Every structure is written in C-alpha cells, then in structure tokens.
Image (tube, rainbow, N blue to C red):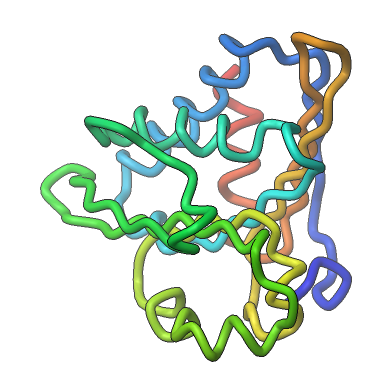
Length: 173
C-alpha cells in the first residue's frame, strides 16, 4: 500500500546527515536486524528525487549486512536479490528500483509481486510506480538533500515492525 493507505504510527527525522552519518544509521539498522533475524521480514520503501540518496542508503545497509562485491542499482534489472546471513539464519534481501515502470500493472507483468511477497527484507525505490499493488509497507524512508553534502531522512513507521525498527534506530544513538 502507498503511505497514505495505512495509518502512520510514528515518524522521526534526522537532519544534516553527511555520508558517514547516513552509513552509521544504516549500520544501526543492520545491527538490530542481526540481533534477531526474524526482524528481517520488513518492507521498506525509499522516496526522494533522483540523487537524493536512496541507492546510497541501500548500499550502506547491504554492506552493513555483509554483502560483498559490487552493489549496483537495479534500475535496468528492476530487482537485485542478495543472500545474507543474520546469525546463523540465511535471509534474502530484495532491492528493487521501480523508476522505469510507467504503469502499476507493469509490476505484475514483470512477475515482481510474488518474489517481493516472499520472506525477507525488501528495499523498494520509487514505490509509487507500483501503486497500490505493492502491498503493505512497514516503513517509508524519505530522503532529500539539505545541501550539497548533507541529507535529511524521515522515517515513517506504518506497522508494528516499522515502529520497532524506528525505536531501535532512535535508542541506539
């Protein structure tokens, strides 16, 4: 579901994040996920204009979860799957970039609904391109530039899981 289809449970903003602070925030989320792999069944959407930092934040999170090698934006493939191990538990992370979709039906036509509904962590850039077909979102991350080197990130929690992740980020400062 799109953000306005689900009641907002909580939100928090971080201002003036440089690259290091953005990476530290992603590392805190990764640490929280590693502490209990069942938490990794999250659907996070990433919002912001081109260049706002959606893929950058995702790369920081994937690195913090242990992904090695090149992490590319799935702009042309639409989805890049990654396998990570949290504790002793294997977890699939799906990174989707829906920028190239022009109609929500393309989400279904591309066969993305089923793999994105499977267990695991879902990171979805440009979620509005899938419209209501996307399903329930646990949290939406809104990124924008404060200036040339700093970003503003607002976390909107829509489910208990999204709220728990937000609390973990706020309490681990």
